[in-house]
Image 1 (cartoon, rainbow, N blue to C red):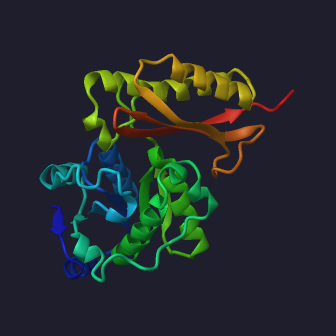
Image 2 (cartoon, helix red, strand yellow):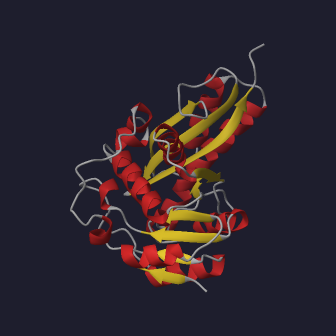
Image 3 (cartoon, one colour):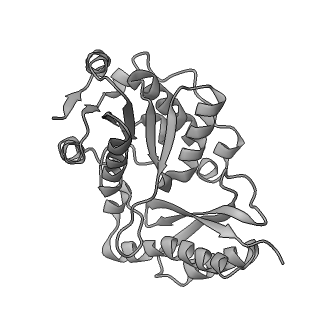
Length: 282
């Protein structure tokens, strides 16, 4: 049975009754199969799984979709129950920020100012602040995050390391549709033609992986990814397509790397990424 709580006091009481290892999966609701995969992965590692559902206003810019962001609590609870969550914490904004907008926030450092941080200034200040607050409130042993939001995952790992937060961060591979589109709560905004255009992101990543597998260098891998993106259905406007090391530092000459892409499709911003390995130069 999945228990649902909405206030800090209710959470404290329910969390106090959980013995053994506890894993947390933090979400903004509008749950889909990707979130369910996170809960199931947590279920395999922990005695109890706690899901948080909170649309965090701190991570939305003035022209972004905070008011439009889908809020589907009953459907979300059905996903949590199906996936085996023990406890769901679905607080209000007032419960999360009882003293108003916080004056102290977590700074993401330079990695958080690039990529998504460059396109969405202040975004990761809000993300890391709410993640740290939720870790404090839920007191988990493990916290599970999807690799689709790879920059977020990387920054959460750095925050936990740098601030000595006693929790293990676990990344879970991206869940995709059969045609390669990464699952996202924002996909529901796409029209059929826009959805076809959105496949340009995963096509670019696949092309990069193929080029890397064929032994091409970083420049050729990026070029192949750009060609594949441009060959897709019209309607996707590229924001960035970059190759970095696994920690989002400047791209490696050889070895493990990360290929990341972001684009606008209509009024919808989509992101995706994949890991690959660059062959050593001859």
